Image (tube, rainbow, N blue to C red):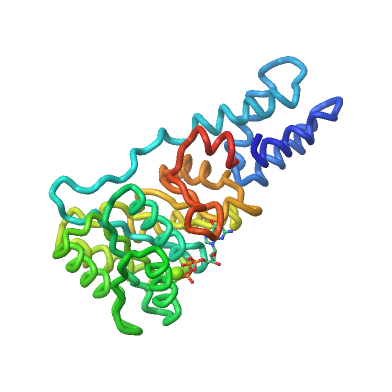
Length: 283
Ligand SMILES: Nc1nc2c(ncn2[C@@H]2O[C@H](COP(=O)(O)OP(=O)(O)OP(=O)(O)O)[C@@H](O)[C@H]2O)c(=O)[nH]1
Ligand SMILES: [Mg+2]
C-alpha cells in the first residue's frame, strides 16, 4: 500500500467510527481538491453501512483510477525521420533540467538517438548543469552563448538534429514564474521558432510540476497552458513529501495528463506514467 493510502488506512483502522470531517481534510491535504474529496465521501456515505478502513482505501483508489487517463504509448520516432521535438517548461526549480536529462536517458535506453538543447540561457550555471548531464549520460548537448536568445538555441539545436537525423530533441528552458507576462510570452516565441523548420513541432510540450508544491501547481498548469498549450506533465519529487494527488487534480480540472514521473535525483529515478502503478505505489 502506498504512503497516502497507508496513512489513510492506519488512521481509520483503529477508530470505532469515521470522522467524516477529518477524512475530508485528509483527502484535501493530499492535493485531491474539494470536488474530488466530496465525491469520495458521498460515495462512502451512500454505501449505507458501517465503513471500514478498507472501504475508504478501496473507494478512494477506485475514484482516482477513474479520474486518471489511460496510459499513453511511449513517444516513438517520427515516421518521416524528422526529430520528435520535446519542449520542457515550468517554474523555477521544479526539476526541468534534471527531468530533461532523465527523459533523454530514458529514450536513449530504448534505442533512440537524442540531442539536448540547453535553452536556459538565463543562468550560466544552467548550461553547465545540462552539459554535465550530457557528459555523464553520453548525450550531446547544444548550448548558446550566455544570454543568447533561448529561441535561437532551440532553432540551432533543431537544425543540428535534422541534419544529423537525430530522432529526439529535448529543449530544456529557463524557469519562469507563471505570473510574469513577458516570461510567459517568451514561451510562445520559442514554440514558433521551433515550428519554423517543422510546422508539426514541438510534438510534445511538457510542464514540470514539483509534487511538493501542492495546489500551486494547478495554478502553474493553468497559466502555462494559456501561454503555451501543454500536452502533459512531468510530476517530480514524488519521493519525499511529494503527493501525487496534484496530478489527479490537474488532469480532472484542466485535462492535462501526467506523462512521466520523477522519484529522486538519480537519472534512473524516472518512469513513464502508468495509471495502475501510480495508484498502487505512488499516491
Ligand atoms: N528528490 C527529488 N529531487 C529532484 C527530482 N527532480 C529534480 N530534483 C532536484 O531538484 C533540484 C532542482 O532540479 P533542476 O533540474 O535543476 O530544476 P530546474 O527546474 O531545472 O531549475 P531551474 O532551471 O533553476 O528553474 C535539484 O536538486 C534536483 O536534483 C525528483 O524527482 N526527486
Ligand atoms: Mg534548469
